[in-house]
Length: 196
Image 1: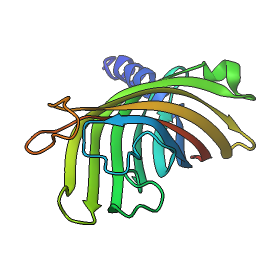
Image 2: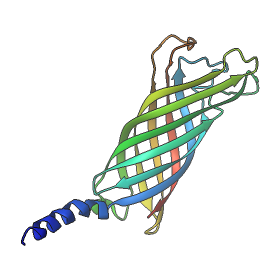
Image 3: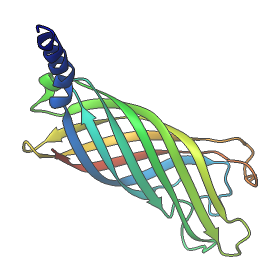
Image 4: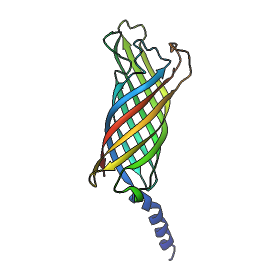
């Protein structure tokens, strides 16, 4: 009859970190820059500044946590008014481990963190002559750092810088027929954060 007590204590100890978790939704905007690719880049736009929007769902404990990040960069392969590329975008979906400064030490200030993980990156492009249409799915990994702070118990802001690397099968520029290709870039964002 004494067995339920140790089991109950064990369940409470295991559940305590989850109950104390800091759950956040971060809607963000920003830009990609410093990119490089072996995909056909008719307008040489992958290395230039390009807008990005997205959302991150994060759960942070006192130090460790994880996030799921979904982002879209429309016009990624377009630059200027040359009109060679009619439409393009890069979409990213990653799951990441987060290591943050202890919440007990940063409750009333900015909380810096490191993030890293992996997932998928999809690059799409339609050119004017329909000679080099592109739709590539790449395995990807990302690493970065950021900081989050709160104005109230529920709302705040965060800033973040991440590096994305598409893991492909071919390093030769412009040769993507039948291969995965490679794509990498930096992403800098500012987010509005809701804690729940």
